[in-house]
Length: 219
Figure 1 (cartoon, rainbow, N blue to C red):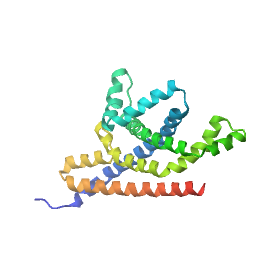
Figure 2 (figure 1 turned 90 degrees about the vertical axis):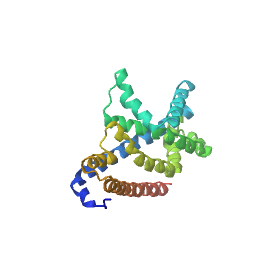
Figure 3 (figure 1 turned 90 degrees about the horizontal axis):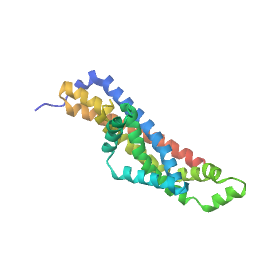
Figure 4 (figure 1 turned 30 degrees about the horizontal axis):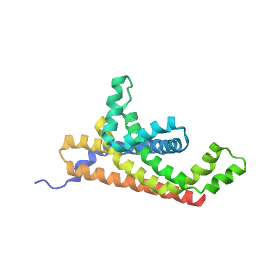
């Protein structure tokens, strides 16, 4: 039986930190895509003509009803078959971004519906058109009301980002596995990877708290 020896981790710190960096890049990029996509999907479902809204609803149902792993395989391996070759990193960002965008869309749609109708009537009474009212009055209030659950989705995205290692992206878990393949010390490297995820999570939560305070102050 081998005891724990974390000195084996030291020669691989650069590799693990690079993996942590790519995990952060994936989280920020896919998080931004999921946020913008969530707003877009929510607005289309609520306000677009049926011929546009129904396909978007169907797309959301498909993405909610299928595993993230399958979606990544379809984007990275499946699209190549029809001539669309997406690099692994871009496929990972798009897959994670779209997967969480549909959940953000549901949250933002509920937030839009919850905005007091008097806010819309007030904006229209001072000359705002439909889309200007939506952009300057309704959506900002919906985002303020839904900031905590959207932040929860972003934290979930950080943890789910490890799944993109299956398409060869050298994020944190992938880097840990490379080190394990050379040292045969899985426990030390998986514990170290877990600690780095925890630190990334703390940084992300701190950023989300600052954002929520900003949102509260802007009410």
